[in-house]
Length: 202
Ligand code: ZN
Image (cartoon, rainbow, N blue to C red; front, top):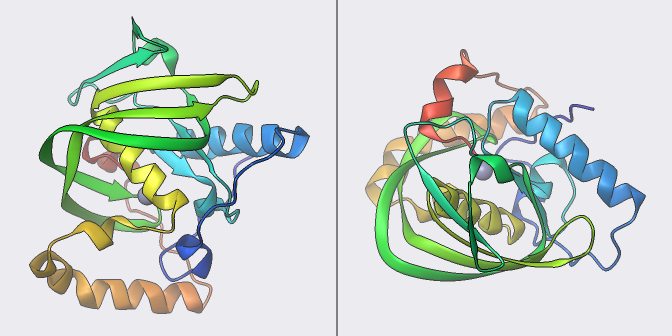
């Protein structure tokens, strides 16, 4: 089932996600719906907060993005990132590595807004999958960026918080308008969602 994606201005986007104690039917169904919703919106990641649940749960899929490569190690073994998608991460704990890199990001909760965001070049994540198994992921490239963006969501942090002050100032009237529209219950649809894929919408 495709869920509606909350937009900037909704207070749930600022809520820290609760740890998931038990992976039950609700969590399995929510994760499946989040994957379907992310694919339908041409996003590469989606956090539970974005569909109205403040939980430590996120889904990712970078397999459709060809111009921004990723690497992935799963439990210490190199694997093909595209073949390992979608990823479902429950209760992720993240460690940042490598140099800082600046790259373009968008967010499904901020239609038609993108920014240049500094992120660590690589990440290590310990999490659980839907089977409850502990997994360890080491990622670089687009996947490392996407994981950092999503784990931020799980802690109530949004990509605009990581923009420099000049970029944020330049966006301020659009952000205020979006916030107002969200409070009035109006949603903005991107004019052409396909356009945003290469720009990384998470
Ligand atoms: Zn986002």
